[in-house]
Image (cartoon, rainbow, N blue to C red; front, side):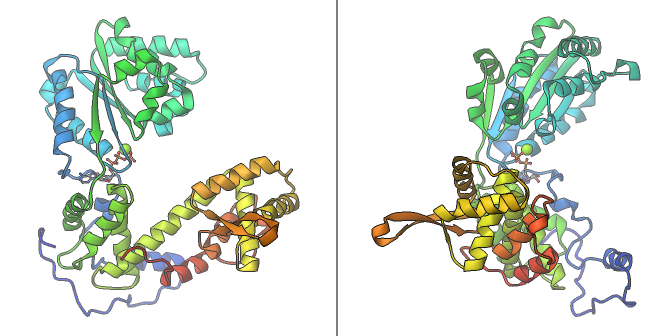
Length: 444
Ligand SMILES: Nc1ncnc2c1ncn2[C@@H]1O[C@H](COP(=O)(O)OP(=O)(O)OP(=O)(O)O)[C@@H](O)[C@H]1O
Ligand SMILES: [Mg+2]
């Protein structure tokens, strides 16, 4: 990779530290002290929170967002704006960049306030309004505490906005989650607040990865929010390559990224919805795989390992967030399949679940609820059901596990709910074994 100062990688130099560390702290110190032979400086460059100065293939969206917001610089009120597109398509990055650009024109932007709220972290309409209002609080006594009525918070928020004056651009990231959680009442309040303000103006900039969420909105809220809309299409493999090349130049020393690495990360991520976050995570993890191998270069094989590891992590995260009875059901299926080294018939699944729930001191759910959970596990890709013929006995469905049993069981056993029936073994060891010997290698 070109660019940046050429730092010759010290090929062939021995890696181990001079004094063998004896404590965990010693190991950590030695890892921290060892300068990475792959990374230039901070690995933050490959993290999600890092916003690069250039966003390739988003020029059109940057211009469109800037055009909508630019009137604010002239003291006019911009239209409300909705950005939508699948995950990892650069929505948040584009907005951050345009906001920074506007804020840089300090003399023009002094009357513009930006408020960024990630609605994924907001539980209630109250906390949303409280957050907005508190950004204008000049003294501690202005701040809105918890426990007021929603009406009182609204009045206080209006008063604070009014006394601050100017244009307030409120970025509501993951706005669809706010609506799913709390309905559209608070959006109604916000979208009509300008009718009650003299000195200040509120502009709403919603970001969503689901456009259909507007179908659930009150017609007035929908039309106000939809004044302008900008689509963020998924990236294709070539676009992802450009994004990754820029980042790799910043992140890695010269010459440590083998040909094919960027291409492979981009190809995998393009298959997964064209998600730039996924592509960057693959590149970062590939470098970490190379470091663990004490390799001097990142190779396409490291990408394959990284992909397997990323998939495993996603599966394990998914298992950990299942509702309790669904976890018990999955564990019962895993136990049955592990014992038989084969699938388990649907008729037997309920019995296995019921026995396990009783052992855990839980009141088993009805068969219908469990059948719904079987469908849910199937749609999550954790299990697969196939029709099997039983001769004269007709046809039935056989449940097969679609995840590595040896990793998934320990992940579920981490849950105090399942722990009492878990087996004593180390998840770390199991993961490492699997990770050194990846089962599936994907399309390459
Ligand atoms: N065109 C691009 N150039 C460089 N990096 C990009 C580009 N698009 C996205 N990224 C990077 O990919 C990651 C994901 O982007 P971002 O968070 O903007 O996606 P998003 O569309 O907001 O996703 P989500 O809907 O999941 O919130 C970030 O690290 C961002 O910096
Ligand atoms: Mg985002």
